[in-house]
Length: 263
Image (cartoon, rainbow, N blue to C red; front, side, top):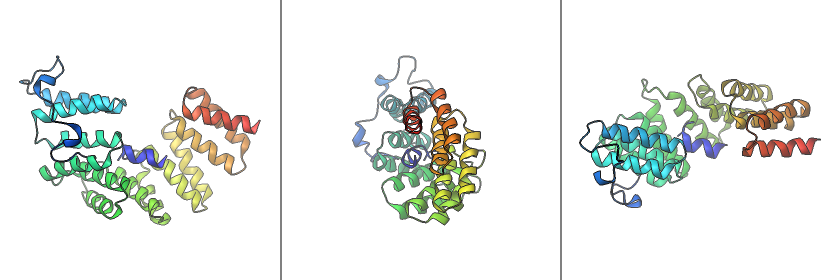
């Protein structure tokens, strides 16, 4: 769960190419625009960016990246487009390339806290913890940044990677707010359990289920916790919920294995 959440953040979720964009080929030209979008339309960069962002969220990363590159060709000095390209690289598992996009965005807009938070997450994926912490703390210093919960989640994840459970716990608690990523509840549950604070761990996981009852991974995490601590009957009920909610998912496959093992 932890690796997956680093790619969103932060939840989210949570990158960039070289300045020459060498790893992705030359920027898209107007001839590569979708037929419904004209290069002389002043809204074209925004439309392309929105389409690219939506495609990346759907998992169609290369299609989304192509739209974002087309938007960048029309507005090469737009830091928001660069930030979205960085997120596309993160989604594709290319944090090194992502860092360069985020860096370009920050060169154009040094106070762009979203790009700084995202770059911190990318540094974390590369194991460059000092750079990650510097970026995250600077983003947190922006008291008007709306995604402060996402920064706290990234800091909590970073401290967990470094083995600092108390610091991880403190930051993850600050991330478990109504606007925070659901992954913060899962990770906080893991940290509390490792600290031996079982009631707090269960509370964090149940809060996650309340926040996102539609997510089978959250239900599965609670079920596994209950099973680990000798509450097989309660765990079974949640495993059954996972199967009913998303019968063809990987989580359902795991739940069926646990149900079979406990029968």
